[in-house]
Image (cartoon, rainbow, N blue to C red; front, side, top):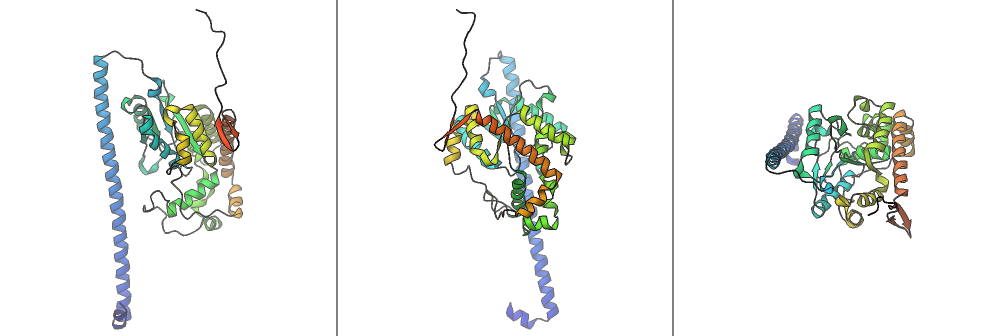
Length: 360
């Protein structure tokens, strides 16, 4: 190459470099298109498999209704849990526990994969999803998880609603983690190309420059995820959305944990829902997968960056919701768990029945 530079005129050298750069750009673009095509093919195959299972389930269900009387079902086997996971809240770490336990505890785990990770479903998809969750008997008991906002099943005339659970995180810490995740990925799938790959700008530099990826509006995520499928939920800074999210957290979710105290969350789920989570606490403490996913190249923000974000009304609302969830979680935990010699243990049953009439 050095000999060529000596022999070639400067103009030809420049043309050669430009041709090389164009060729590299074209090659990288073709690789990206191949990866996208592969992803579309995988999703198409998955949808085809689901349709086949649904058709088989419908045919089997019709035959059962025609040939037999209905028998009382085991309530534990009819349970459906929905974990509408918020991005970058340790959701992959927690979901891996469900995957590790499903074989031993005999339930199904289903990932809700929406197009372009859109957390809002169309009305027709809402109907399909509610029908699947409530009538897909082959898949019960089931643990559904995905980046989907809360969906109120009562609007669709459902008598037996699923059990909702979730985990949330300090809003600024969540945003910082997501910011670096888009640029550097994580140790879960290190070879996957991320949307902002190649952008070396730190979170502090982004805040200082007033960048869009670190703007206060990007904090608005946990409130709408709990608020749901109403249009007002996604209006950034909506007071109505905040109050609706609080209402749903208290009234529609069995338990909402926080990333910073995930072990306590896992322990309480095992106590409340052993059909799904028997062995979860020990697995979380000792299993290799429970702490698997970590964002690469993450740098903690400076106090100046944090202070700048905390001046926004959006942060104040998201932080109010986080603190509301944290207070509720700590209240539930105080009535379920005790600490002794640095170890947590669950309280024994502290209610009983008496004065049972009529006496036999």
